[in-house]
Image (cartoon, rainbow, N blue to C red; front, side, top):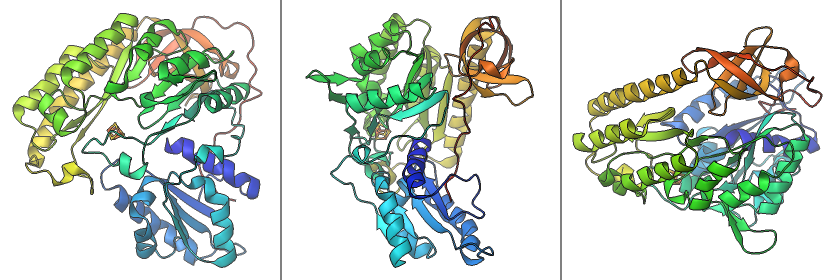
Length: 450
Ligand code: SF4
């Protein structure tokens, strides 16, 4: 989501004379677009700002001091405090106000007054964002929903990203068509709680995500659709059945469960239990037997006992995940769980995390092994690490490297998998037929400056 937002910030700045730079040295503006999810996020931002401070002081000959901005969820959470702790920062703005970036930059340059803008404005920022610049990327992100109303007790998102807001089906479809015209073959629909998306249907009534996906699948040239991240309680029947009958919807789903214990799920305010989760997975597998699953797990949540953790291991063993993310619980200031009693001892958390990760790693390895000897469709996205190699993704998100010409980039080809590595695959293209145009391919953007 932050990668998408960074690109949109660049879209806003290019018309006022900035261009993207790959490094901070010599830049006219440096934006740290921050995430608040990981532990000690704010401290990491302050330490990064400390590294940038000399750029503000030691102005390189012939260059003005760069503007320094902090954006994203740490900016939203810390606000004014950033200006107090890092007096060389010029701009602080949250995820919901970055559409005002050109005005903010103009104001700071004109008045020299520093700005903090962490509102949750009533207007929809997407109405104010310019058209996306051409990137030529084969695989693109498209934000369709932001914010979250679920208030899981460990999570900062509802406080930093605000209430759930869905974009209209019409504007999403228009953006998706523009991306496909620009060379995209795969679009990943993004949202903090993406499957809570709902919007006015073009011909009246309301659509939910399953219907939107069916609509987007009609765009000629769009070969692959994905969405992330989903909440189990928002997996409705229409979305589940789309996995069975929309060929463009890839058979890979990240569906965080967090714990296998109903007691802990209730303490987390997840509003689903382990049985609900199992039922949803059964339905998904009924409609799409080959679907590969990924999940998030938190171990050592306040009050978690050995018996609760055993239920998590039991659920993992029963379901089987192709990929997963697992973390020790760590408190986030301002969230209800941070003040809950019965915090779990750090050694216990470490031990449980090691046990869970061992099981998840074994499942991931054995899923990778099932790919050996299979022929899978790969969408090629760019040059591989080695000369003469191209890399793409399998339907299950694995990076797949093959020795093949660059002209395959932007096409889907059948690849026979010959080798498995820890997180990727190597194979041989089964069909190299008509040449594929790569005219649309351009560099990808990573930083912002003039
Ligand atoms: S559903 Fe996801 S984003 Fe929303 S509060 Fe829970 S963990 Fe955070």
